Amino acid sequence: MRNLLRKLLIPVLTLCLVLAVTGCGGETGTEVSPTPTETAEVTPAPTPEEKAYSLDICLGMEWYTLDPTYVNDSDTATYVMHLFEGLMKYVPSDSEGQIGDTRVEYGMAEGYTVSEDGLTYTFTLRPDACWSDGEPVKAGDFVYAWQRLLSSDEGEQLEHATGAQMLSGIVKNASAVLAGKASPTQLGVTAADDRTLMVELEQPCSYFPKLCASPCLVPLRQDVIEQYGGNWTDADKIVVNGPYTIADWVHDDYLSMEQNPYYYDRESLGPAAIVWHFSDGEEDTLREFRAGSYDFIGTFPEEETQTLKDEGVCRTLDGAGTYYLYFNTDVIADWRVRAAMVLSVDRDALVESLPGEETAATGFVASGIQDSRGRNFSGGASGVQAALYSWLQGWYPDCDLTTYEGRCALAKELYQEALDAGAWYRSYTVTYCYNASTTNRMVAKQCQQDWAEVLGLQVNLSVVDRDQYGALLENGNFGVAYLTWMSDFDDAQNFLSLMDSNSVYNYGGWTSAAFDDLLTQINTTRDALERDELQYYAETQMFSMGGFPVCPIYFFEDTCCISDTLTGVGYSPFGYCCFRYAQLND
Image (cartoon, rainbow, N blue to C red; front, side):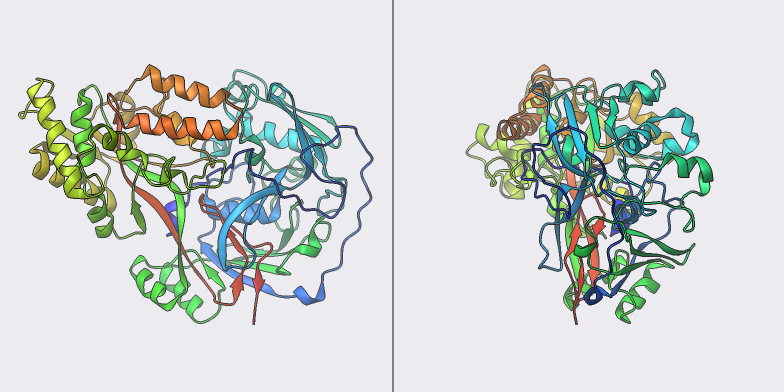
């Protein structure tokens, strides 16, 4: 369900994917001139009569703000992406099907150039990029918005936003600004003129252009925000630059949007209006959908999932998250024991017993992540052998790791090797920590049972209060501990970098100089295909001799219900949807 993906996730694809460019003004291409030109005068475009239809959608409950700086969940990110637009934008990859993947195209930018060292991006804005009050969108609007995102002066709300962390370590001085050690004016983003935005990076970042489609990196109007303060997003005050603007907003009931008359691509838009209904409860939402009141819903009772699939209205979509277990490598120091524990978990049986929509993990990088060629990264470099068992299969070719029985046989062999070497003793016990939830309890009990039955390993379960769980992880007070990771962008590095020896998220304390070196190579490699292969190899090395720092359990999936008359919806594995070009058919 979409409530599993409420966190705002900032997706990015890699630079080498083809950027299909659309627009109604100016030349387009990947090479653009930074030479300033005058902003063209733009008048509102008429609403095409043949597109006078509206959509009724219910994604979930209402969030507390539509301010892009503070958006922290996927549903509100969807609303924001229909009101605002960044340098790049997300559009559906397939306009014919009902719902499918998204790709990134030029948005407010008509093109960009990259310096030879890969450290400076120069974006040129469209001459017809306008705000909903007819004012031109300027490069300075992006500078203001990005500085505001990282500014420590924005108060307590900032700690609830995830977008600020996205630029850290990527844009020059972003980490220092976020930490309060540098002024926001020192952020590496400047306006050379009204139509030219220059961004300096800390190091080459192949996926940076796609990062610019993020809903938190849209431009903002400083004059509007300063005039109205915290009320600037009210329906009668907000000024937007995206395809839609707010027509009406009744809190706890609905948010109604209509086409922005100054949007440069208005003639290509689908719905004349979109009404976002806020959920009164999963049962009520489903009831309204079945009655024909809603064209699309993102929340409904989990127990209805199979029935809705049988009815042909429920779709299951790849998410961009992994549920996994950390191994404390000080407590479980021998890699063979960790590998045996990974092998002996019956993931297929486990996910079958869980109430949600998940798939058994085949590696650490989630199934929603793609490589530069658009392939699902979790399929492995060959597309056949995924990372979790790839090295083991090559090292132990006589073992059949395609079956649970075969994996258990190798698990017993590795465990016995550790016992014979005196690296582990049968008297040892391991403490498995988690916080209370139905899913966490079910996973913990199943793993405890599998490890006992296959390895004879005694595992004690310990429920930890949520407010104490973070400190437990940071202090390493566990043998095994669960965590979920929802990717911030569409690149495998978001997962792989968690295992860097110096990462604050490397709670298990695993260190590998060879793995760290691979991460450095990945970060400095600009050739997309070479970078893909390095990332595949790095994940494989995580699950090789000396490794197995984590035990992936399952990949998240998302579900929705869509009317059979609705087509052309775009879905991101980070949990938000694109309806701007959707069609409602008779």
